Amino acid sequence: MFVLALVAVFPVHAEPGVSDTAIAVGQSAVFSGPVAATGNNYRRGIELYFEQANKAGGVHGRKLQLTALDDAYDPKRTVENTRLLIEQNKVFALIGYVATANLIAAMPVAEEAKVPMFAPLVGTTSIRLKHNRYLFHVRASYRTELARITQQLAVVGNDKVAVVYQDSVFGKSNLDTLLELIKAEKLQVVKTIPMAIAATSAADIAAQIKEASPNVIIMIMAGTMTEVLIRDVRAAGLGAPLYTISVGVADAKASAARLNGALRGVITASIVPSPTLERYGIVKEYRKALGTSAGSGDNYTVLEGYIVAKAFVEGLRRAGRALTRENFVAALEGFGNLDLGDFRVDYGPKNHNGSSFVELEMYTAAGNLIR
Image 1 (cartoon, rainbow, N blue to C red):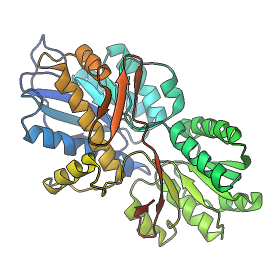
Image 2 (tube, one colour):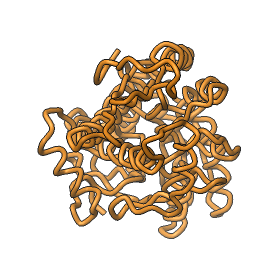
Image 3 (cartoon, one colour):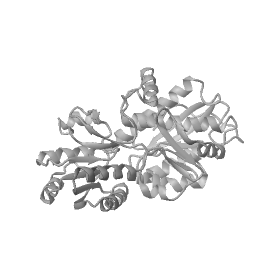
Image 4 (cartoon, one colour):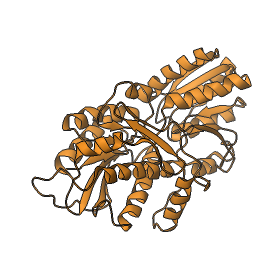
């Protein structure tokens, strides 16, 4: 269990998680196992902005306190953690959940308690189709990412597609979305193959892809399995371009080192700007915060966490000193189209989808991204 700060003692009749001096926020995410880098980087970004806000005096004089619990990518643990955060830790809101199945499992618990859930690291389309008053997204949907990929494939003429997808709710749901988009762009699917989350070899998958002879491979997966597939596809001599969605490579520099050059040429959808491009106001602010923080970590997912936390804190500020969960939701819905620093989120009473920012970038051998 990770705890940023000790939970304060809250008055009996106050809004849960809110005292005169603190606001308690909870997170359940994956901090161990094959997808740990994603959760740890996301938490790092959230903590980075909270730290910055607290140094500036907090929100209406209240300091932000984050309690983050490891669910190890297990939806059952996510449910347990969510109940613990709401019932025992008495958090005001939840932030930064990771993974489709985990969010789906936890949503009924939060909704029943009327606890806001903010910015899950999830882009699965099906979750966004039914409006939930207490769920707010920041990142663009996976549908938006996959549409950007299929549109480019149609333009460049890579029309024979092989898809390798994570054998999970996340992978299967987004495979369905991708197949719809492929049909709309009049591309051809030559092979779809599931891959286990904990797989340590993809040699058999690479052999199946080779037999299908695609001219492009799309990966719908997250964590170390992405590295495994890239490694074994390249080892099999397959030269087809590889595309991944934004969660595919969690720590590009570390992956690049382990892949020994094989990351070169992999194309990814990015849902935030490059964390080095200071022409974006939010990136300039982020880099300044990194310079004054004792923590480590600097990549796209850390930046995403930082952006998420900034939007969350802006909602708290607009809700005012007399903070309740209901006026926090109302404050978020009052954002309209809000500029967070050359990065916009859009909310309204029937729109909790946040950003539509998606760009395609290519990895270098060292793990840098170029356009």
